[in-house]
Amino acid sequence: MVSEKVIIKNPTGLHLRPAGVLCKEAMQFKSLITFNFRGGAANAKSVLSVLGACIKSGTEIELVCEGEDEELALKTLVDAIESGLGE
Image (cartoon, rainbow, N blue to C red; front, top):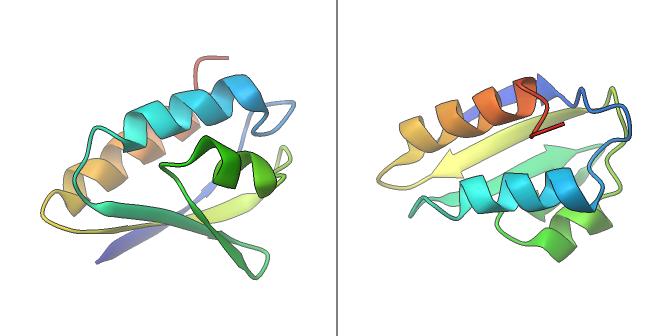
């Protein structure tokens, strides 16, 4: 299991478009991918789970990847978040 904390930089947080981008990236991997935030946890492969987390701009989340491709999954998702998830 690997994890890394990252801050959401999107001005409007994780609304539908960036949540979809995050899920699309996460679904490429076999690993279980979740993120922890303010005492909660969400499945990064589920758009509804990501949207339900109500993540605002500036919120720190901890990505957690567990599985055979966990290292690559973590790096890819951190890079995607830091680049603004397409926004």
